Image 1 (tube, rainbow, N blue to C red):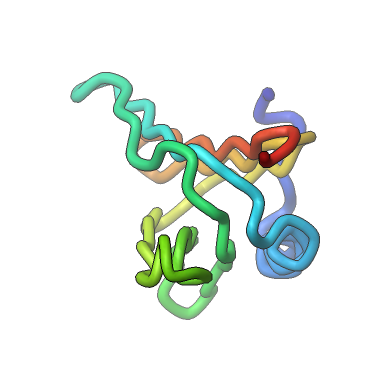
Image 2 (image 1 turned 45 degrees about the vertical axis):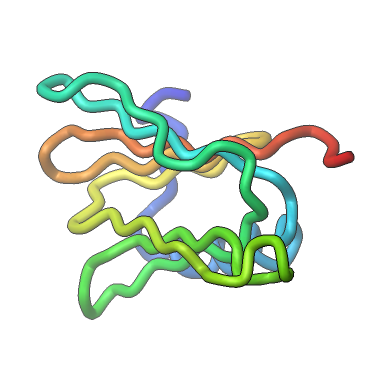
Length: 111
């Protein structure tokens, strides 16, 4: 994914709402790629709940879990002051103003 595929800021909320509608419940991973602290896995194979962009607070929120007895609590991952949002294939990529990249990947099928 390159920056040339990044969505226009005016499209972020609608595109993330569309992904939420079509992908809710699918299994995902969330990875944070940071030059200073290295690459870290934040979420491994949890059910996707939602993705949202709040223009007032300038934050992308990704929620996982909260949809079953196995995962009763919604965990939220916040990306403050994003500068790029891409939705490509089976992934959402968000880059914040410090250059940290958050990558949410959907699994092709859930068993």
